[in-house]
Every structure is written in structure tokens, then in C-alpha cells.
Length: 110
Figure: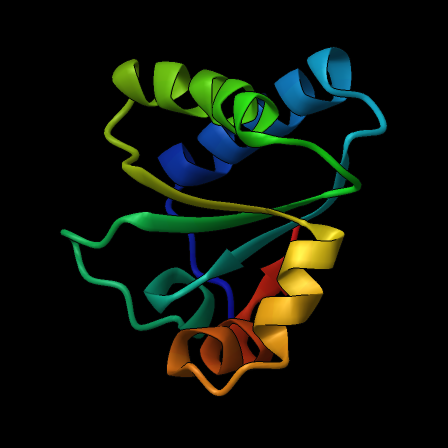
């Protein structure tokens, strides 16, 4: 049950627009996970964002999150990014770490 504030929805819309314009074809999937996705967020909760890229390296991962952080300066939204290529994500998702299971179970594609 995705539960975002109006400000978070606006931030997400603006960030997606930047991704489509500047990184067209790079992002395979964008998911919100954590308390916002579960509908259990509090006033102090951050916005957990998972980006799955078709391919890329650390430079691209850094470049793709920068606009999200820049947009957050103008708002009260506090994004927390995880960025993986599809290959990296599939390898991690198969693991037993609770975070990967939680993201797989609760993550909401947006």
C-alpha cells in the first residue's frame, strides 16, 4: 500500500521526468520500498528508492541519483537510493539477506 505525501508525489514525478529526459532507456525499473511502500511511514521516514538499470557502472549510478538529491534540496523529501544493474539485482535478490526479500515482497514499481 504505497502511501506518499503530496510533496513526495511531486518529487517523484519531477525525478521521473528527469530520468526520462536525461537517462532515456537506462532505467529498467524504479521501485519505492520500505515504510512508504508498506504504508507504515512516520513523519520522519525517508523515501527508499530502488533503481534497476539495464547496465552501467558506478559513474552512471552516481550521475543518475544526483538529480534526485538536487530536487530534494527544494523540498522536504529525503530520498535514500539503492542503484543496481539488472544483473546485480538478480544476483542479490536470490540471496537470503532480509532486505532483498523485503524489497521483493513490498517494493512498488512506480
